[in-house]
Length: 338
Image 1: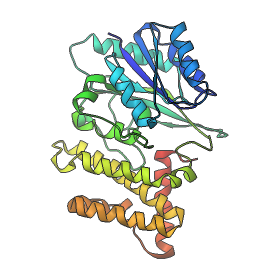
Image 2: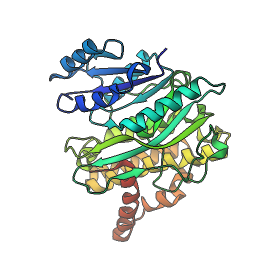
Image 3: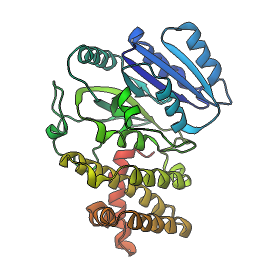
């Protein structure tokens, strides 16, 4: 069994995927790299095949009809043979030194007598043109040097969340929790990191800047204009997160609070994108989302509506919109809009 399976969803990625894959190959035989060619129309499939040919014991090229990012991740999970599972998008890459440290620690833990459900490390916003790279670290939130539980987790400030770039999950846990991402839908990384959390009992945090999250392409899913254009998909993800987990049934208080806060920020992003679009059609979608939330779970509606972020999303007039912009800046820190 491989130590770590890494899925690399690719769609028309010929211009940048090699940088990503080359950074992952450094893991050697401990790693399985699953390049999922999601119906690309350029040379992505041929590049994937060439890597498999050169590194047959490490790389596997998988070709499928276009199903979107979520379906590519599903394919990665279905084909993963590693003990642990990670997603690295094809325009991102990983740091060599941090990578080696993570593999060493995972190997050490795998050889011990404790089961590890989730491994967390830092990620860097590689924002094009930015002189100073913002790093998402978790030194204040998590203990270091030991396996810990939710009871050991400290306070998460607004704007600080565990994102897909931060996590490596135990592969079997992803199957046990029934994780399946919707096809032809962007922003499913939020479901990927959110839905398994109630199944996570044990965690380990390594304070290394591992994942390099590239931001800067105009066609990127986190480009604000692109997000507004795909607001229906953002709202779809938002609703799946509302439906999939009954937060009131989560026994651990700290986990429940964290997941409420995470759902709140996703709802804020959905709402603020509707507001910033400025169209009556999208403002109606905002109202429909909150009405849906009210009909689905009235307690959750009041919890989110009465939270600081929720209140700012529903204030009337110019003053309300100004406060909404402040909330937007917090959500911007999380998503990293360009």
